[in-house]
Length: 300
Image (cartoon, helix red, strand yellow):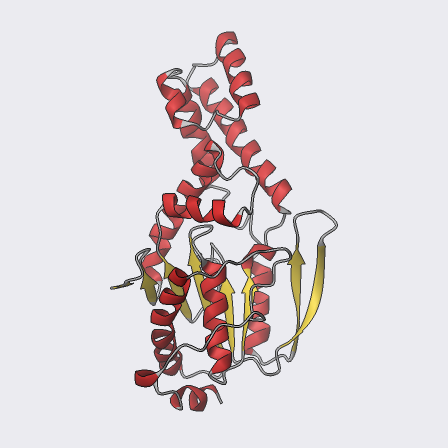
């Protein structure tokens, strides 16, 4: 019973176990984790609070979400927390939410950009700013992939209306049910809560042919840890303990460069996407039961 397992832990004298090479990690194919001292320090502060929350929950099956900006360290800290749980005699599994968008990253990135540009173009027409000269400039900006660059507004004032309309449309897509398959994740949570010993989990790589399902043994799992940018989203149901890793877009960008997850981490469009995602995090972060700052301080 999970209640008995957590009751047996002496949190006052708890010490983090030594790290191992074969530690648990998220289940997204090809994902890289790079655990550093910063991640360890944060996980060590979160873990005792997590155990206290699990005790208060009182259920035999607990669902935890670790969420925050893209690249802030969710994978690393979720892996550490899962490892700490396992070393404490509590079965746990890390599920990567990045397996559950409708489109592979290549196609999803293209969809995001298409939505932004189509809405931006329409915004210029509605504002009566579109003409042949604007069209010529816009084609060049598209080719250079600098149309979302805020600094370009100084050179082309009409670009402000374009970006405003595009950003609004982008906000209506990112992290919504149009982009992410929350229903499938909710089904997994439901099956886990019911005590299903075998659950099929989706795997999504970065190519069209890299999509499949693995049957995972949950017979000895007490805690399901979901690491996901959208782990605090209102469409995700059944999360017992949301954990927010607070960050700024600048910190997020720096970490993405380190992990080299995408080929264009410095692009103006990626910067805009991170900014829109941050707005969701700022809104949903207030519902987290545990919050930790970028400096590693537990937040009220």
